[in-house]
Image 1 (cartoon, rainbow, N blue to C red):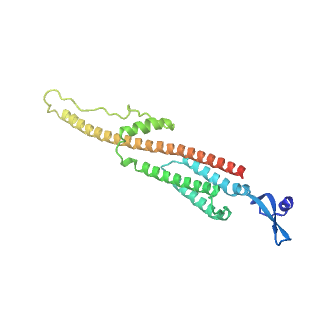
Image 2 (image 1 turned 90 degrees about the vertical axis):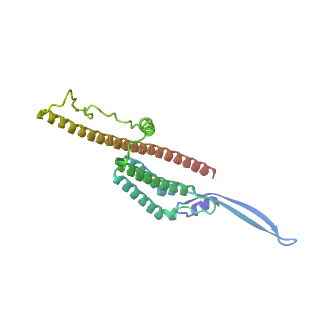
Image 3 (image 1 turned 135 degrees about the vertical axis):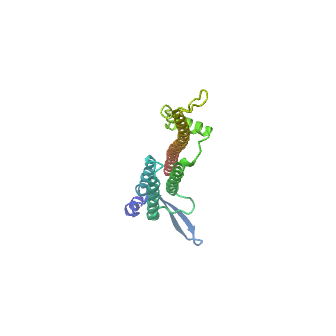
Length: 259
């Protein structure tokens, strides 16, 4: 009966017939008569290949594309637009494949958890890109970072994520003070007056250049901080995806073997 049922069973490749068991019951009907009842127990199991090909592999491919999108510059709008397009495409993909998802009443299918996790990771990646892009575009309006942030992010985390702070060359940015020293009473000579006036102008220019260099240094520090945070979140993103996928695969294999 089992072999005949396997040859005649049509499940479109979604179900697999595991076994058929029969149990006979004898029930008396009258004092001198009885009749038999046979109960058949049919064991079915879902075929995983249809879900792997149609749902899991496309989701893994889209997550991989989202992962490699971190290579794009975080201060460019193309990165956020790319991630938004990716999320839109994945949402349409889930709507199309919604009829293929298994429906159960009691337990939530593991594949639904996997698809929801993929969508949640894409949304988190987009939010991270939006925050970092806003942070980098507004870096010119911030004052210089506090010392503890420079030590924690630029020195410690920067070396941890392989983005150390670049040393600044001070030789070509420092302007010496051209203030003229006055010895004795000021001469009435016109040339000396011009030199003294020129010294005051150069002093003002020097102060403006120092202010500009200080603002440029502050902007560079905040941009470097944003790049380091972006690299750190990218590494955490990889770790979380790896751990989540390994956990889901282990649960899936254990539950499939137990079934």
